[in-house]
Length: 294
Image (cartoon, rainbow, N blue to C red; front, side, top):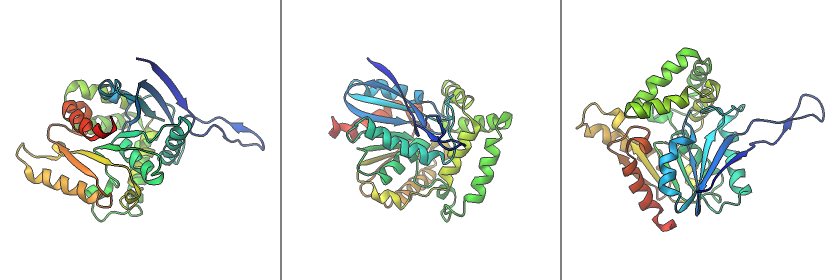
């Protein structure tokens, strides 16, 4: 199959320090395109490479043209300045327009799912169906239902400062987090290889933006069909913890209350990286949802 690498500049040039001087800026993301058919955009999560979608691309590329993103600062890509996620969101909208993609399907994991929601809410005319993997419109409300974008700013700023410092502490914290998010040593090592080559400032900016941007009302503007695939396994205390599963499901329903017609399903045998931990379940959900697009 044809494999093409495209680099889209988020901002082709920015004003320099002297009048009339123009300075080239880093790209908001790198994109690899594979396959033929209806376009699909695949957006990875925090610190992840687009390679997290390799299995998904193999599954889809016979019938879909897969545009696989790796965001600035993640997994070896040069980082960009603030505002991070807003710049990426705008660049993705420009990418869809410039590539003349007709209502592409968008699949996003975690931070990538948040970006997909934000793009679809801001530019509802651009995307086709959305598939959101383990992401919500406002992450802090998962832990504190009374949280607001404003109330979380002090904590988010403190978190950003700590993460941006990088060093051994950043890698230890990343390893502890990834251990809870993915099953099996092979997948752990894979995800950690991306974290180890991620710019800590980019990761810090991404987390700050998610913690201070509340999309719970904004998602009402989304007109495309949306499938949300969540997971609860990482939160359970034992194999029969149905109360935990029920609470996680309630959290998802509450977060997406303003999104008309959203479909929500929870994986029972996967942690946060659903596409790695239980690919067969993910593909069944994906195929059923996208069947009308074939």
